[in-house]
Image (cartoon, rainbow, N blue to C red; front, side, top):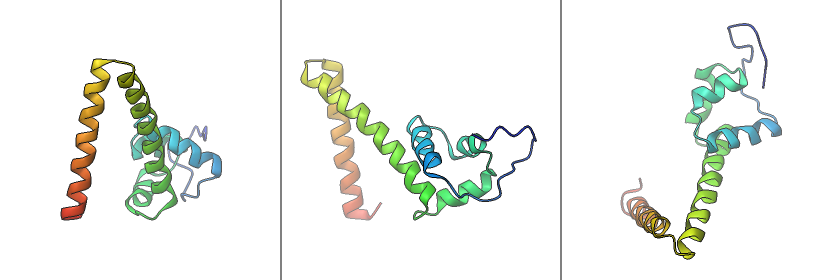
Length: 112
């Protein structure tokens, strides 16, 4: 992380290192917003938002990947707990399955 004492962002571009890409994944996985990640890396928020809006950008890939990895870890644990007899986990797991199927149908039928 850039420890700038100046109130204005120093970084003009959004070239991320391998280490920063990993950090983006971690931060996205704990639900940081694009604006918060911009502040973390000392990047102008509007520049990072443009990168996020570009579905093919490196930043967008690592942001979405971080969210996916985090969600997968939670859902694996929920499934394990459900298999071990945790009723609440079973209910959450079932709800997640239904939501996932619904999203797949929306995408298949309407492209959304």
